[in-house]
Amino acid sequence: MLTPFRATALAILVGSAPSWVAAADFDGSKPLICATIDAHFCDIGEVCYRTLPEVLGAPDFVRINFAKKTIVGSSQRSTAIRYMEAAEGQLLLQGSELGYGWNIALDTKSGGISVTLVNRQDVFVLFGTCTPS
Image 1: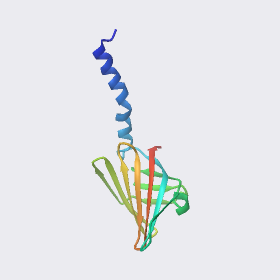
Image 2: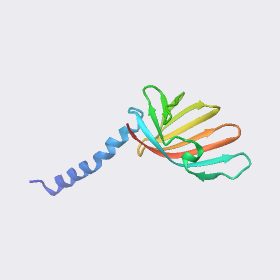
Image 3: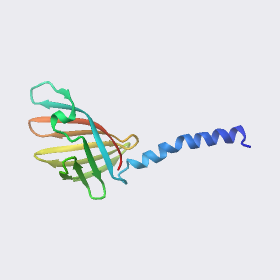
Image 4: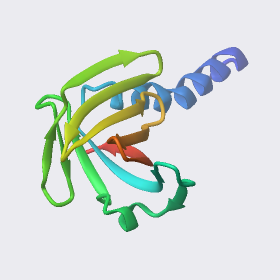
């Protein structure tokens, strides 16, 4: 029979295990599939507006392949990850595509992402979440 101390220790260990597993999912060691959830569009000299990602032409899902250093959108269009940096609590990715520079900040604990696409005239900001694929 378990003593109260051992039962408590076991409960804490079992209850905290999913957070250990989840943290490893978003450290750049596994491919991810990410869904875009929210979007904002800002044009120079104008007020930014909030909309759905599909209204801006953003893919519903993107796949991040860290080993190949690529991001593939739902239309199978691929872009290279040119820069990756692990920072405290996040993984930063950068690249460029179709005249835009893009940045992704991936939360290494939750899998949440913040994405920006920017050129000299406007900015797109997307928010979403990722899961291992």
